Image (cartoon, rainbow, N blue to C red; front, side, top):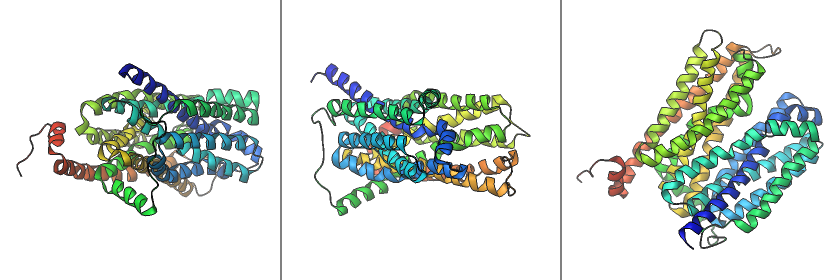
Length: 435
């Protein structure tokens, strides 16, 4: 296989994987515009409706390590095909669900299928692209895949109003069925094998691999990078952004929509920039992440401390800076990739990918609890003061996460010096110290 042919095949396989991840994000985000329809269809309260979001995040987070282990054992192609099939069938089931219990069960399996896509695409990137291009392709996977959330806005709103609940969900489920067939014939695990699986592993071997991945400081550094950077934008985009901007900051519905759209555009814009930076200066990946965490925390401090409602321009800067957290979280995967042997990359990626969603779950829960605490009499909505208290809970996670990043970057650099002093010298730009 010539270099040109392999390059074209790599791009084709990546595009198929990216399309599957895009559709998974579309499925994941579709309830953002179908909330009122779901409340009416299943005759449920607002708290029951929010259970869909919490369940989605919980299932996705809990599935990351098992999926990573499966990718290492069976290869990304088989796991990606399985996830696509589960996602398609579950969404079809959701289309015809007529009870709240049935809908929750369907969304559980949507979450399982969704969780089996992203790690597989990243593993395909590692197998098919040159090392120097992996950071860029990783960032592009995360950024372009998130366009599925954009597609879940205007197009899905039109589909629900024109086609109705059942037919709209059948249409997007059918897209997954088509992609399953395309992936079946086009996707290969490596240039040398359609499906590259490892021998069967016992529980002891699985545990040893998981333990070895977690014990490496590079994996832990990637975990805390993902933990510290992703959750603020995720929480704003999935649940609390619109209420905070409208009730907490006095913005109109249209302005809140514009701000949340700007945040998505920010996520897309910073991905290639961060990929170039970490490729050019891999030694300073953790420094870049710490700067992003400090920037996000500083902008939130400014907005929350602003007398009254913050000006629209300040809120624009807030969502742009929060958007930086998305591509910054992807840097954690680069740490996992470079800190583990190929046979453990899937496991390490699963560990790291779990972090941001666990942080998002914690943040969603803390914000909800504090809002209820600061609004004991209920009423028609939450006050600006209640949102100030609630959004301030994020600082606990940023502080703890930044401390862990600082700890494990020192441990990771020391381990690299012990194991590969030449690479340590090349990346740090310093001479190898005398022993």
